[in-house]
Length: 257
Image 1 (tube, rainbow, N blue to C red):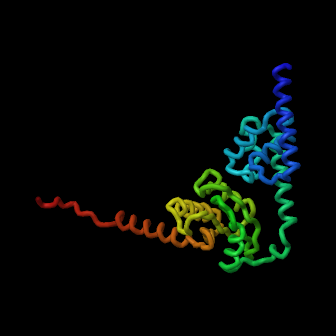
Image 2: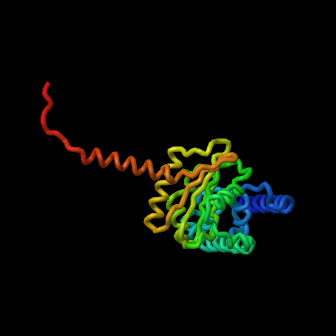
Image 3: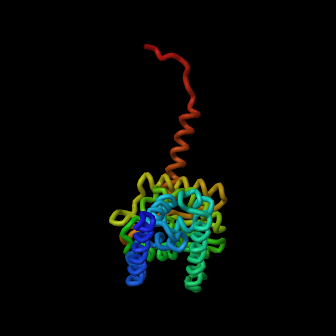
């Protein structure tokens, strides 16, 4: 068998096995990169898409990040043509429409005007989640939820949770206000220095866009903690102390020995 034909045959065999596994499990147990790999089967018919799926998720932080990425950014990844980029964007938009259709109409009417309502909603999303997960909740001016954006899984300071990406998403969705949340599985609901730093950065980025960050919640086991006020207070105290030092009078007299 010629090398190229042999390579094509190996890819075909792998794809058949993946499809069979998917049919048997319904996709349960598939990693995100495996689902993306299968999606790419239909856009790239004669090439191993496993490595490309890994590269895309590494580049954009998560499966949702890949499906929400702009076509020009997707095309910058080696191996992604405009045809493939449009295919991925179509899948992403279809997923958004599906979610909107399946979203409980009664839930859409909920006004999230109390901490209890927001915390109850988020707590249900973190129930049984064994990994650190970041959500960005977007609201309209009447506090109806526009989107529960799954930013990424992993550390909140990871590439998938970039401040720029979160701010851009809030702006594109036309959010009037935003709430950030993440969990500490197996830990405590207490912010790390990184948690506080990214909170301040997102607060400042959204402030430029005139989108208030209402709160940042940390969930751990059956507890939660709001940390925005703590982060802003620390920032203000540091600023005040810096200004005191900067404006303090300086004596030019030499000290006597």
